[in-house]
Image (cartoon, rainbow, N blue to C red):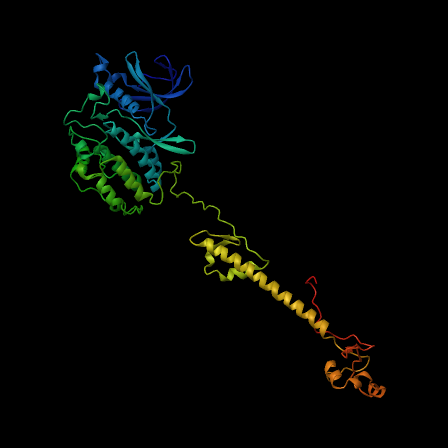
Length: 467
């Protein structure tokens, strides 16, 4: 039974509120700073593991504080932030930032298989944290979904790496407490995610052991199952060290889970048994995976998208085309070779040489409008000219059967006759004739008949043109 409970004060300033989790080494509690009121996470060691004697010499305590020193040395948004550490009497504690969200292990339990872009994003965040650790000479040695926390950050989420408790340093970055090493033949870590050299208890392991673990985590996210798994520890170690490395597409062939192209080859390299044949850095591993899972983007998206649907693509608004003339659109649209280039009337897709086609359409519409206007003006002018120069002759009697000769020809041929017509000819001839006189210069003047009858005019002006 736990010796901790709500209301208990740790180090005189942290009041325990509720338990967040429990492991083999101790417990994690939600706590409140008594003076600041800020929420923190307090990690406490089980007092039964401490034993008698000097606590500073205890391997358990040294590993416990190694986690605090390792996380504090890595100034990365993808590593949990350490706020405080120390003793409450004989009880060691670590105060960390309070994280809201869930572990990758819990998300895999709910979803089984993650969308490719989500997997690429999580692996990119974890690789950033692990890359920082490797640059500082720190090997995590216990990477697994339970040690990856997906933290809510407004509308997004950030993956953070937890628990550097069994981290190993190769450069003394963790000081004297970081110098505690694992004895040859001892196994530390979570077996399902351990590399062959780590599973065999080799003393000299380096950062490439973490890269193997990253490959196993990616396999589980994409396929929904672990590549190496067994209830018997011996059988599990044989799978990791001796049996053929699983091929992702063959593992999930029966379940129908889609495997991205190239993932088989990627996993074969990430989990090559020979460390020199693996990816040689966390960044190289993550970038190659992101290229496979998110080839059209960076792969950095909101982790809050926990479904399997891909994010919606929003098409930006296109340029609007303005066309001249009242009927120009009807004239131009049949000239378009591809009807798919128009999304809806007046909106064109902007691609390639679309700018030239827009200018051509505007010019064509303008020219067509000018041509229509020119034809109309010509018709009106022609109609007006015809009505003024060719009046229809009429009298009160019959309709003429033959056209009279031109007045100018008659006057030139016989000016005396046209000047003095007889009354008898006017009475007996049904064809009306125009009466004319001559001026002092000898040119005839044509006059209209005194009596006319209104008849139909075929050159009558049409309504609606505004003239």
